[in-house]
Image (cartoon, rainbow over all chains, first blue to last red; front, side, top):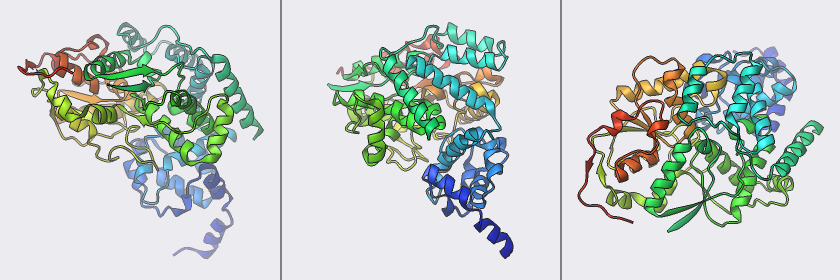
Length: 189
Length: 292
């Protein structure tokens, strides 16, 4: 039996639900907690809040529980939950939206993934294409962990599976302008 | 002779260069002409959308816009590039607001959604077909047992018409069967390999890819066949990710065709898990063959 007082507490706190629904364009309130998302999730074991609970917490307005969770960063975006949801909620996309908001509010629990994402995009912005070796080295330097995986790296270079030199595009100038414009629009939003 | 615009993506120029070589080899045999997209840039992969969705669409749209000028279908062998390009292309068609916004950023280029994005399974199914594959075989691969591994990005694109079933895809199964291999049924066709966690959280990849490798070994396969460069890489790197037990080689779909047509692999030296156990299988030359 739901305590009416408890229920009204949730009803008063719908702003967070509306915020996420608007930002993600997903109908989150249609979730009826069937658990299908959590059952099929390959990284459920690594999560502190399971996917179906994330959706429930959004509906209940428990902002800190989801934005500060490790789960939203463990998600691999494999979309198993999204294609299986009987209510057609793209849960992986909801999680993606939560990531953006948690970074914006500086509530994010897992910093490594965003560090890698930023280095990756930096490489694209500068060269147009990914320069794997540079991104990996920058990541390792930032993590102060240069010596791990050396054997793997050497084997990959030896087998021709890691480019030594970057491969830049010709029209880097235009691409950089596009990046800058998007970044400016994002900060002005 | 069919001509396709070819979008390689970053992987096929660096970590999976031998996949490109293999594609070119096999396509030239079947009479498919590929023309590399002029000055293509990264599609944004698994990263751009998680930082900024507009950026992700703009990056994908830039390439689609250049491709539209050619008027051919766009062939995208990398699963991540395929998924990202397809999502953007679909949205550009359906969502006028996004189309205008994206076109404003990429001006003077224009992306209107007039082309179609195709993955490698679609290309083989539509432009070669199983009959032509079966007739063109030079080597008998019936001694090789394979498991088709599709991964996530190829079939799981929410709210989009996908070329195959998202839970039990069969496109690659059919092609492998036509190429003469023994295709085994297994339950891990669409499991996740761990994606880019290889860099940020190695244990996740090693556990997820490890389970896939275990299952493939358990059903008695000689090789795992995939079309995705990241899946191939993660599975192939298992010996370096701390896996001690037995591994079987992970081949690209086109490499199976190479074996069926030429009886050998060009990219042998690029595989981290040695491919010997597959290429040393009794591959008998067939008497009749049709040349295209």
